[in-house]
Image (cartoon, rainbow, N blue to C red; front, side):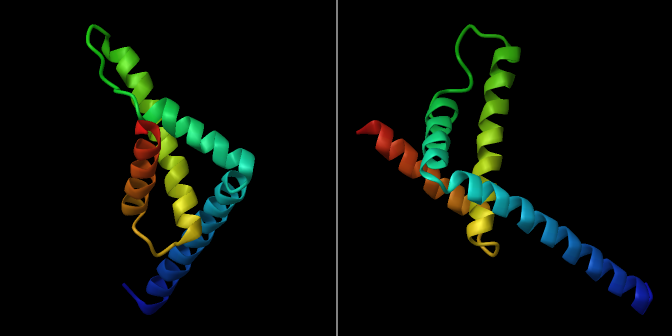
Length: 106
């Protein structure tokens, strides 16, 4: 790879990071309001604290629940990334879920 190709690759990566930061910031602005926090907490409680696989149900129903779960994970990851682009999203997500589980178990 020539020097110019390397430079173009760096520029492309920087553009992708800028776009990712822009997207994450929009998620953060949306879910950092009181209403947004309430909605996110409601989504966590509704879609993440109940079993995905239930006895007697078909794979289609389980797939729908898994999809809902995955959407909430994506929302949380975007918010966490906006708050700290250097952080590990899965660690932050785990902390967020732990809070949700603890709050719901009281």
